Image (tube, rainbow, N blue to C red):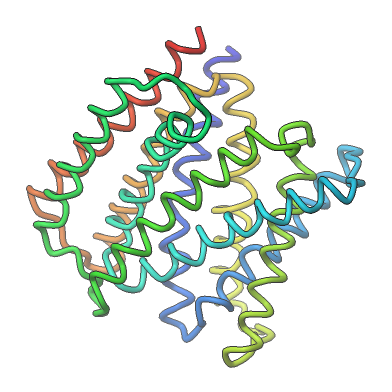
Length: 295
């Protein structure tokens, strides 16, 4: 029953994460800037998670050294979100999400390059497989239906891979590993929200939204696709384990791709389908390889 519960939580987490491009682009098309959309996303999510933490009796006090580490981690996390929003505006959101899903490979490579983990032929083969998948993916019409710079979109999606990998490695290998997950997440999101508000103030301001319709998109982005996703992710790992949770994470880019096709008319070709399949396969290979090392 616990494993079934974990699978359910993992499925909820990955599928709700996959809703982020839909809600983000809905705000962008409504006239929001990237900074405005992210200010609301991280700001509202932070308030919600702080409330959850207080109800659970979480201790939010951290030392100065811990705060310095958390601040650096928040820069990685904020870079991930910002680069993804730029990618969504320039290439198909589903494609951007699939490229972003390559972050487990970047994590594995970083552990080999910087933390002297043994080189793995399996991981290197998975990287080669993912490159082939990315090439096939690029053969299709991956541009955003609204137009944009495809090269910029691909570069930003790639940046999100490495910045998110940096965030994950940082959580594993710094003082942050000893911090409770709820306070850590709240600090990372809260600092990110402040950075996005500052960016918004320097690029046209951040509006005070009063339209109930747009608040539905904001709630979907900040609560469903951010807060609930993060909470479900922790529960999924707790009950089903990190390996199965990571594999079920494939629902995230698939959800984003389906919504992009249905809601925004994004293109999908057979080359794209094969490319997506190879990228997902490469990630599964790395996840299963990490699982074998941990056993």
